[in-house]
Length: 256
Image (cartoon, rainbow, N blue to C red; front, side, top):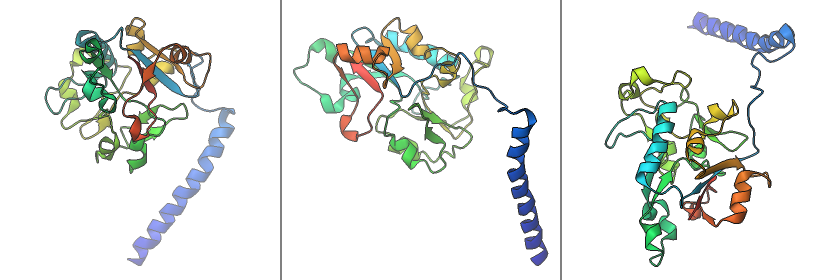
């Protein structure tokens, strides 16, 4: 027992010494970080989205955008209670339960509304995740590290918007392997996933796929920049957000 303990302490010391030396070697190698940021990347202090539901309000139109999103991100097609979704649609009553108005125009009540992760300023999913698999980036995007996810689903319980899906089975079985997007990873069984505001596209200078395909019905930009497109739209149009009493401060706004 003593020898085993002594060996363990010795190995731990060697590992710690290696960690201490490695960064110095990396810095001394060529004088720069091994990975350089893409020069075409677009940045923001806080990314936000505005959805014009006067232009985007049918199941067909929203499903079309969902198809684009799901293809790019290799979201498996699974029907029923085990469905995995990043972008979907629902009724006014389910989308805005705290803002139901019985005298609202019938046309608004009959619309369906696009739903996705709200990338909240105060995300409860981040607070409850025990492994930090769910984390908030400096630009406000709530991201996922699938390798850290242990499948506890605390983040799903903490999210008041139902914006997360759990992979109960092998997600790759729900994919057309001949149509996979090789530029985005597939996931594994037992992890949670959701919309990521297309961080991989922002990194190469592109807007989120749904925004690009929406033909002007969705706007994306820096909420902290008064000259950004989203700030311009928010000044000119009346918007609402989902479940304001939750205190999460969603970064997705809806023009009604």
